[in-house]
Length: 220
Length: 114
Image 1 (spheres, chains in turn yellow, purple):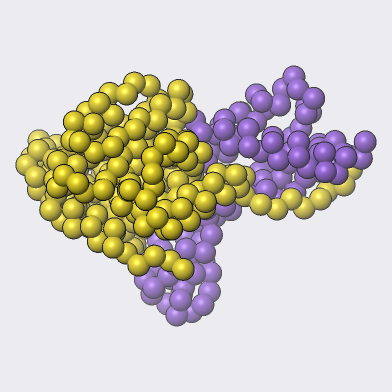
Image 2: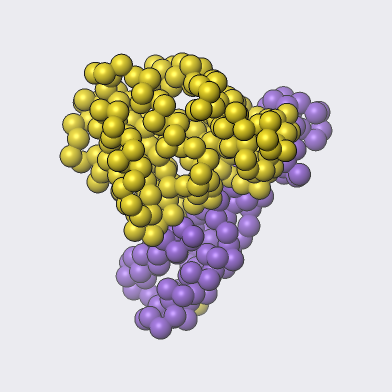
């Protein structure tokens, strides 16, 4: 028996496809944001409010991932921007190949901002690079404020953490300061924003972040 | 349960390497970091489920766990992050950066010439 070294990442194929996607996005001036959260944290609602805030003609597109149904795509299509549902048929995350396939029928030059709503899951999407420029993790106040400590891998990769459903704060025992402390413990550089899609709290700042993310200098 | 698709990717690599070395693979060594987002027990379960009853069996999976590490920029030293504490244990500086823990990498294979 011989032991031979074996190098390389296990998700090498996904990373390769994600690198291709990233290169394509950069070439076409498309900024891609990957939204991750547990089911029911408000990703779709946030996207609805976000799309509603864009002026018609703004070159925004959405890919939305779910295990089954195209309910989210139907909800999002009302706003007049291109939306495509990715139904994973059981897979608990989106991978770079699914994104690549879903994008094939669109002209990438016509998209300035691509919003990807990942499958609702705080674990599995973490390991899969989709070629995004920024990763946003949502945490709603109806969840435990210790989620960042329970899922450090996910929060560690977040560029921005959105605390959502702030309008429900009076009715739940969620401790905001603790949540912020836990987020910063697993990702000291994370930006944190508080939003409510019901009252509109924080949505302007979120839009500003999105616009700023869409204006970030591109890496060489 | 993304461990099933990860286990599938690992077996693709095993088949490719097996063909390349013209050898039977007896064991696969893997490095899994604390921040990889992969649960090694469910990975092992999926791996065994995919291997059982195929021409790859018996094939063992040997996992090395790697800790979450940060590097202190002022001290230029690595340290293991314990209890989510990312500040430097030596000088107390919060000016540290990730130095390890996201690994999901192959390490080695044990093969037998056929």
